[in-house]
Every structure is written in structure tokens, then in C-alpha cells.
Length: 259
Image (cartoon, rainbow, N blue to C red):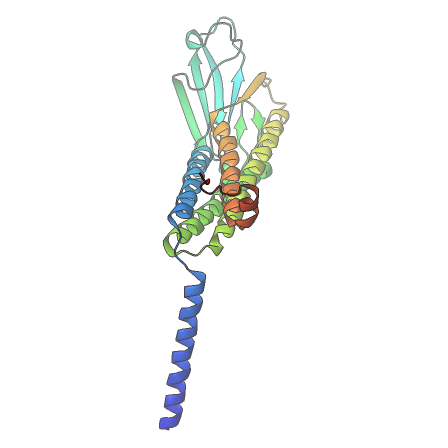
């Protein structure tokens, strides 16, 4: 009985020693120069993450503007994003001169904001007697949220590289940031199709639907900027995963010259 207990104790000790050696081989101390490069890449990616969260969380992706009418002191405009839409009644006196349409939506006025119901009850939203196409809007929102989730995973991987020295996660983080940037770009394109579908789905009821113009706003600009910055951050992390010898042969170090 004592022989078997000693055997199991030795096997357990050998497994622990082997696991310790594997951890020591996979986790080594980063040099200060390499750690600084990784931190700069993480800072760049954090800027992209901030822009991405700002874009997805705000509702100024597109503005819908009606034309100003003579004899009326107010006009109507709307702005919407992935989750919410807001209609506003603006004073025509506040609209810049020379502008034929109502807006911009940032002007002060009576606002009525509601969340889209196709996330809860599955109903389409109606804006200026036009109906949304909920399948396209849902696809844009889901893709954007998936992009944020992959982006958060990339941030976690890079933090693990800096804290634990697990450099194999550097390539995983690069893939995550690149994929998140691409997903945000796809979400922007799907949302553009959702806007086109909204403008075409005009109701036949009386009174007739007003003529509209549309313009993309600053939230969508933040989304485009976030995608480009995240892709740039992914490229930086990918370069850090490459071996140093090709770059060393292209840019050889110069030693001290003989006098």
C-alpha cells in the first residue's frame, strides 16, 4: 500500500514540475523596448475602442430632414442610430439661411425619442410615414455588438501579454482587433442599406408622405474612424509578432567607426 502511495506522489510531483516548465517556457519577461511598443499599440487600439463605443451607443448615424414650408414657423427633422430614433420640431428661424431643408438635428427644439420596437415586440418603426425594414436594422445592430465583443477580447489578450508575458496572445489580439474593425465596417454598410430601405418604403395613406433628404452624421463618422484605427492597431500588433531577423537585415545597425 505504501509503495502505491509513493508512486502516485511521485507522478503528481512530475506533472507539477512539467507544468511549471511549460509555463516558464511560454511566459518570459518582456524587454522594456518591446513592452513600450505593445503599450503604444494598446493605446492606439484603446482610441479606436472609445470611438467604437461612442458610435454604437449614440443615435446620430443619419439625419432625416423635411423641406421648409412657407407660412409655418416650425419644421420637422429626425435622427436615428442602431437602437433609437428621435424626431424634432425645430423653429425655422433657427435654421441657417440658405438651407432648404430643416436641420441640423443638433438645433434646440421639441424632441421625441423612442427605442426601436423590433428589438422587443418585433414591430417596424414609422418615421415620416415611412417604415423601417427591421431585418436589416437588426442585422446592423447585431454585427456592431459582435464587433464590440471581439474588440473587448482583443483588449483582454493584449493586457494578458503585458501582465503575464504570454506573447502567443499577441497574434490572437491582432486577429481580434482586425476582425472587430471589419465587423464595424460591415455594420456601417448594412446600416446604409437600412436607410435606403426606409426611404423607399413609403406609406400610401393620406396625407402623403413629406419629401425627405438625408445626411450621415457624426456617430457614423466615429464608426468609420474606429474601424480604421482598430485595423491600424491590428497591423501594429501583427508586425510585433513577426521575427526580427528580416527587419534587422534590411536595417543593419552601424557600429562605431575606426579612427
